[in-house]
Amino acid sequence: MAPRVVVVGLGPAGVDYLLPAARAALERIEARYARTVRHPAVDELASTGIELVTFDQRYDRADDLAEVYSGIADSLVRAAAEHGEVVYAVPGNPAVAEHTVVLLRDAAARGAITLEIVPGLSFAELAWARVGVDPLDGGRVVDARDLERERVAAGGPLLVAQCDSPIVLADVKLTLLDVFPANEPVTVLQRLGLPNEEVRTVALVELDRVVEPDHLTTLFVEGRASIAARELTRLLGLAERLRGPEGCPWDAEQTHHSLTRYLLEEAYEVVEAVEADDPAALEDELGDLLYQVIFHAVIAEETGAFDLAGVARGIHDKLVRRHPHVFGDVEAETVSDVMRNWEQIKKDEKGTESLVGDITPSLPSLLYTHKLLRKAASVGLDDVLWSPSQARAPAPPSGSASQARPPAQPVGKAAGLRAVGEAAAFAGSRTDAVARLAAALDQLAAPAGDAAVEGALGELLAAAVVLARTAGVDAESALRGWAAAFRRRFEALEALARDRGLDLHTLDPAQVQQLFAETAHE
Image (cartoon, rainbow, N blue to C red; front, side):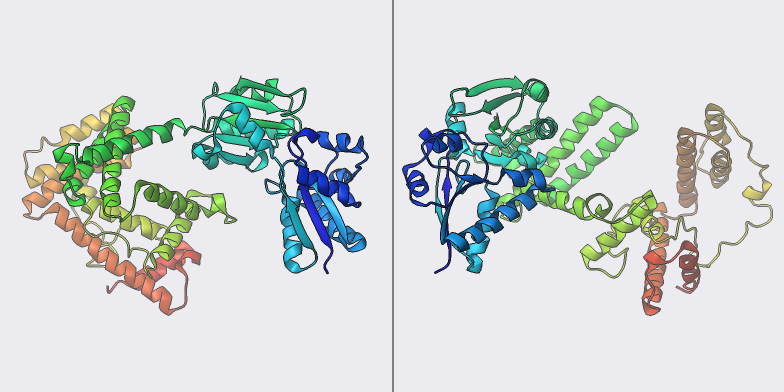
């Protein structure tokens, strides 16, 4: 028969909280061990003749707790082999937050020992009773050393156990401050069940300043969701009510398709608020856009397609995957490195061979072209200026506007914009548009601030639209045609690299540009 280990729980305090079954095992088995002497019941049992060998010396010798727990489990297995049966006492309940018991279960699964667990009263039962909370109402218990922001923000009554040192307490405080305001009340429970028991409430910001932690210190926070999570929940409930039987007829009849125009409108209004540098308007417009996201999620949940939680979870996990330089061991020292990693990961996720395979052709042509060029830049093909009709753009013909203009001179922001504005009054003629283009190009060539460049670029694009109109060409279609031709050539570049066994992401920009030049026939 395999050696036997009987694990008993000492309860949360003195022997008054020791269950009869645990007391009987301690009295019956002569080879007695306890994880630590730092428990009130250990001394009280010793005074009645029940002495236990403790493992406290291991805490002083080992480098980390994992080594301590592993050593304790190994010692108990050897002791059981020597004595045939041993009893091992742990604080509280052996089934709650006791890693040595986990290791003993593994030993039992291997056949090294037979294992019996005698439950005990845990600190949690006393803590719930002291704070007046029924744990069935969503109560949770977490180890202070494993506390994470996401677990706190999930909401619900929360006990944070084993706040046994100033360092641990300070770390807990910082994590809680990520979710709660500085004045959030925190209940501190110390030495529950003992004569010097103390239960008091302090402001979160004062936690590590007014509390002297010990091995019998636990914290309780009401665990309500963070302010942002709570408000999002309210907004989700509102959307569901408006879609419900007693809600709004207009909301009830909307579909994903019918809402697309509003989604676009709200997105453009957000951009307008950003351009106006108006924080109040931006806050308002972001709310309108957020509601569109929630509206779509509610409609999807009604059909069982997905829900808002899935939307949030999906984007959270996607961002973690696409930031391996933050959450993994990938190195990315520059923005260019980040973008290259991002595009490669996105390509792998989509299961496409082409970096441009996931770009929607139905996007507005300016945005479509921007996305194409951004993808090209991620492999070192930066800011490609290429005509579908030729591999290299020809030099401007003699007498063209660009040659006829004198060299651009540095100008101030106001003077530069005024020069652009005075170049032509946009009567809608081709001559006026060319003049305006020339003035805008001069402004763009001169040193200037971002605002001046942006203004000149706007003039340049507007002039290009007028030129298209006077030539009977649709500017949107013209740019879309250029983008489509560029996409075909970029895909030819990728195919050429694959045929030669080359990885575009590992080539230097000069090599990529040489390959691109070889696709001039596309």
